[in-house]
Image 1 (tube, protein in one colour):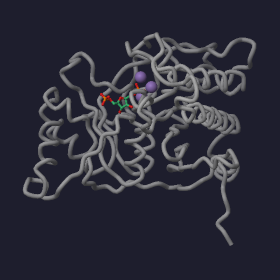
Image 2: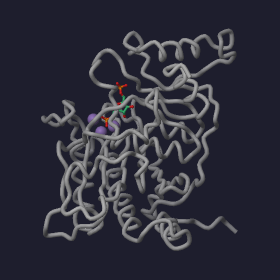
Image 3: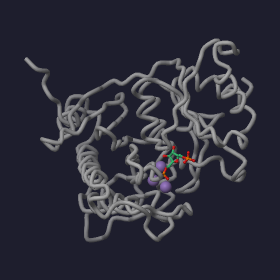
Length: 336
Ligand code: AHG
Ligand code: MN
Ligand code: MN
Ligand code: MN
């Protein structure tokens, strides 16, 4: 008898009913985000056959030239989530301020943050990209909702995940009970549970970093990468492999699947910024997933999920993945 297929909906109902883990409203919110991810996947899959490729003529608050799909994905997520009554407001890489649910809709108790299209530089070259999302609770008793309500540590997330648009479209999710992966069954149009209780090996021989930035790195990162490159003749006594997809969702998905370590460190190109990646809707959701799978995530010195945000689009250095490797890299920074 073939193994029973568990849909995302069934998994979430069980997380709600059996484990009492998630309230109904959060389950409904996650179902909406999954449906929106499916719509984004369909837009991505059109490629040149649709009006989705190439750049728009606008810049986002990060000073990045927006791709058409950045904007399309952002609109899909806003339109799918604004009317359901689970959310008070949303924040996105592609929007400067928060988007408060219009008065014509009921306001819920959750805050949704997202990177609607991660890995935009890969859109036009048919390499895996994705959508990253993070869910926080609106502070108790707050009347209305302000940007400051979003400034919560990553450890306060109630759900986090991503959907990677690659050879498969796979939704990866945690609500604090480990990490589960759901592959989109295109015939049924539903996400099917294909992996749960994902676990990352504590050691690895695979690192991910953009090597072209080497001359800009700080000493601890240079030391770590040099040791990896020295291979088994060097201090690590083993050879390393390198991967860099330049879509965080793809690099993190590989690490959740077979281990590894991912670094996007501070570099002296923009010395006043701690790095390129954004804390609220890239580093926090990815760090929670990695920790829930037994890995670790720091900014080189401290746990990412402990960082107290002060700005919606603030950046952070990221070192995440196999626990022992992250601890080694962090010790090179702290000397501990
Ligand atoms: P986004 O496309 O959402 O702006 O994010 C891109 C990020 C991340 O996905 C990836 O790890 C990193 O940029 C790649 O940076 P480089 O192009 O500098 O390697
Ligand atoms: Mn971007
Ligand atoms: Mn991104
Ligand atoms: Mn993006």
